[in-house]
Amino acid sequence: MHTDRTDTTERQMCAAAQADVYCSPRCFGSRGRDCENPLPTPAAEPQSTPEPDYWQALAADLRAAADRIGSLTGTPAPDIYPTLSVHVGPFVERGSGERRPVVEAIAAALGGTPVDVSVSSLWECRADVTVGALGVTAWTRIPAPEAPETVALRAEVAALRAQLAEGGAR
Image 1 (cartoon, rainbow, N blue to C red):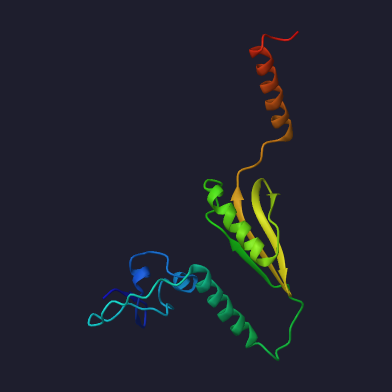
Image 2 (image 1 turned 30 degrees about the horizontal axis):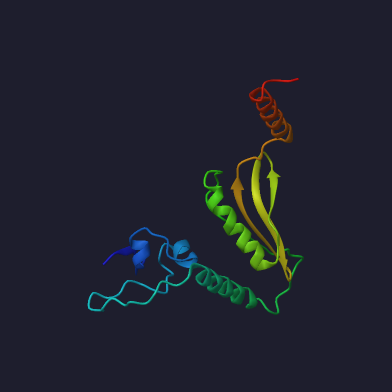
């Protein structure tokens, strides 16, 4: 049995963490220690239950976080501005074509519209939405768009080439 050793305890890890594969947001964050689906005992038969949907697992984790925040009922509340940031994919531009539709889907589910924005010297496809008092941002890195001047020059070059192909300027 694969275990995770700590100074005082030995905890069983889930099958995904054992294989170093992403399981769920909660399990991944704890490297399997907080997974609700630990490895079966050797005598147990493998179960043929379908894998839980990623989005349903994430929603359950968000509900659990909300319940924990709800336990603060009755304590003084300073001026707070709660936010949730959903970063889609790695912090690189490569592969943004596959990640952009995920940001768009999250934005649509929350009633927002994604826009391409410059952040410092980098570009992001980003959707900022407010759900009650919670600010939600979904975003991913994208390549910088071409400058309008470059687009105009490419169009002019294409027009001149087409003119040359027809026999030149008259």
